[in-house]
Amino acid sequence: MRRTAARIAFATLAASAATVLLTACGSDEPADSGRHADPAALAWVDKVCSGVAAGSAKLAQPPAFDPGDPQGAKSAMVGFLNSLTVALDDMAGGIRNAGVPPVPDGQSAVDKATTTLDETKSKVTATLTKMQDAKVTDKTSLDKVIADADSTMSGLSEPEGPIKPLRANPELDLAFTESQTCRQVYGNV
Image 1 (tube, rainbow, N blue to C red):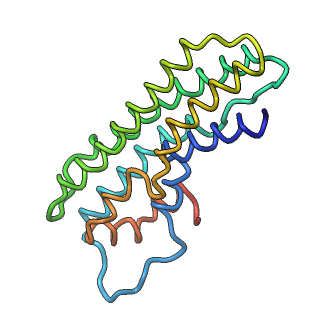
Image 2: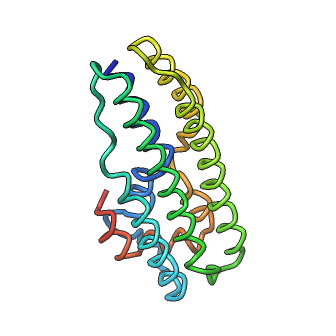
């Protein structure tokens, strides 16, 4: 049961893009392509990485599960999913609050990224509602709740999360690559 419960916690984290953002924002060194990011685009990316970090920080500790306490395990997962919905809102807010990126097709990239977060939040919310409504009295009923959540959440593991549409824009990708703020916030991963 621990392995299954841990799997849902880590699948949820991946879906939330918290760990994904670590690799999406940071890199050891900027690629030397002979050109550098526009300072305004770099400033925008710095705002995004700082704003998204606030949401990601809320997911640093997945819940602990006790196989001997099915109701407690359910409560821990419900609490975690609640935190995840708040974190997803914070991440989308961090992107929106940065404004329109000063690059061609910047608004389109923002719209795609925030749509990804909104869609993820909808699935998390649906999972949360099902989990809250589920009757858990023993290990078997807990396993069913976890299996149902795994089924819903498994489709959310986009490897680059909400940053992917932003990085699809060549100007923003260059800025993400060169951003010292992103490396400071997320480390050299």
